[in-house]
Image (cartoon, rainbow, N blue to C red; front, side):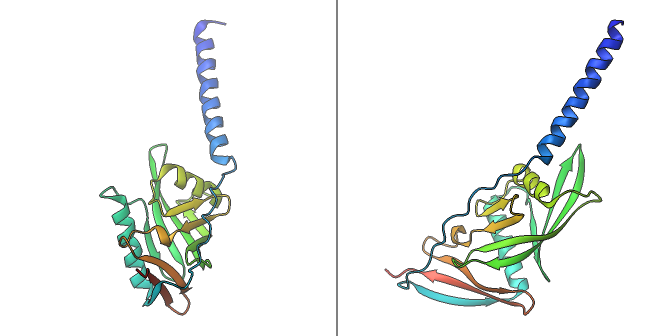
Length: 191
């Protein structure tokens, strides 16, 4: 066998190995970081309830995502309608694919939100949701209060870490999209 054939088969083997490794990385099980412990109010702080519409919450969420990115391009855009929808983009082999993820919101007892993935679209590709969330977590810089949990197919929104001001904290009380009822609580500490 001459050296050109040998070089060709070595290069072809290297390409096949690289593609197989990429498929292995994408398809490997995703690990998720644990959720922070639930913080329950002790009743000594002042609580101000604010009722918001879907449009209000959408605007507030996108404003704080933009603020957390500090001038960098926005990795995701949130829309609130029948469900919570996140729009993003994913680049695969120099092709940019639109990523649309639909979530059902769940309010935890500590007032933080869990967005449980209900469906997703990645261009025309059929990719498991946990894989898309893993790729999103690894390739898109999200604000520190958005925790992607691919194994559980959910996104955790830690409202307590959103910097409203030095003293104030926000938590969700009700998040009913069907009734367009979103009630947020603003916690003002007693001094």
